[in-house]
Amino acid sequence: MTSPVIKVDPKLDLVLEREVDVPLELVWRVWTTPERLRHWFVPKPWTITACEIDLRPGGTFATTMRSPEGQEFPNLGTYLEVTPLERLIFTDTLLPGYRPSANPFFTAVLELEKSAAGTKYRAIAIHGNEEARKSHEEMGFHDGWGTVVNQMVDYIKANSASIGG
Image: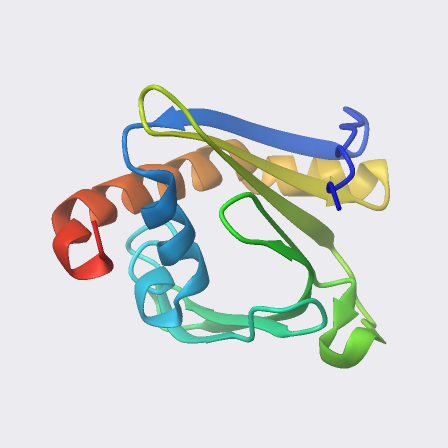
């Protein structure tokens, strides 16, 4: 079964597209392994202090981010789609077990494709309204998510042997 194409709505969605010079299989592995994800998933000097991944539709995707000042920000959501080596969709709109969230913010789509350079990487942040999209953009979506992609690539290059490359 082919996954449906995600149609981007510029009024509601933010998009980050890159071609990165690391293998798709390693990008997938660092996105789907808690002990790998916690090394690069937030812009430094922020850190991830906890990460839980239950990689299946309805499974938990949870991280706790720590600011440089020591404040912790838990994020809890669920996977909607897991298509190995191609696509991850997770959301904070639904919690594990498909329970509705009291404070939904966005749904994230990660699409991966092999390319001549390594991996075509596309992240989409889907919002329920224009205000949420604008807020996410003003929080620094492009800089933050762009920094995280750079950190991910650096992490993969420095650890490819242990990751499996």
